[in-house]
Amino acid sequence: MADNVLGGFLRARREAVTPAEVGLPAGPRRRTPGLRRGELAELAGISVEYLTRLERGSDRHPSGQVLGALADALGFTADERVHLYRLIKASTGTACAFAASQAIELRPTVRTLLDQLEPAPACVLTAHGEVLASTAGFRRLAAATGLLDEEPVNLSRFVFGDPRARAVFPDWARVADERAAVLRTAADLGDHPAAVLAEELSIMLGAEFSRRYAAAVVLPAWTGVEHWAHPEAGPLTLGYESLPLPGTDELRLLVYLPVDRATADALAALHTGAAV
Image 1: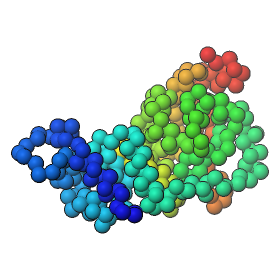
Image 2: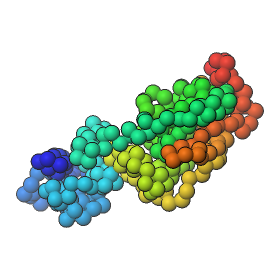
Image 3: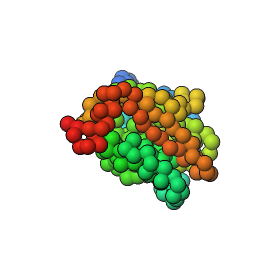
Image 4: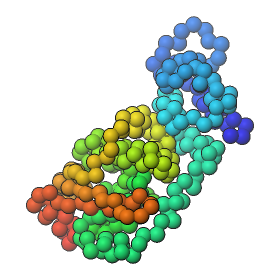
């Protein structure tokens, strides 16, 4: 990274944070402003030697987990986390990491299959959770939750990055664990966009994401039940099946089905526009 802007940014932020701001005693007279390297290293769970290499620029490719831990320890604002992520993107060239998924062309038969599944909520997902195509039923289900507000639509980013997801999923912790397992499995198998998204979430969310990602050592459950607290349709109990599609792009067909009569009636009300 030219001129070691990452190291300079980390050092400047370290020197701008007082011990009191992170719950440490001021102690004896300090030779440098802000936190000592040893104090920050302990707060972030890394070695002083490694932090020194980062600040001096001899190591310019830290993991997202390390950067997320430093951002947590220094109390980074959302804007500062975004800036940190942009610094990493500028140095590693990950800005176009999702181009591959944008270039995927779905087979006409897959689109026809989606048409045949109407009005069931169903979508085609990439390995890292991006929605490539969906039924109108899925869009009706997702619209009021906020899932469709950002492009490209991505289930993993919504679950972890959008605060509304915690209201949509009453058992958010379990859903988050599942999405972390999906990302970890894809990244471990060499899916570059999944690895890049995991890096982004590690920096932007810190330990909130990193702990779940590190603990995701089992395969995802490709079938199960999710509980939704839908803003318009109310409580929903949805069974789901995540089915692999033939091909080299590691795509999956995700279909939601009502588990009980109340959910079936609520989905029907969404379909007719009668949901309150």
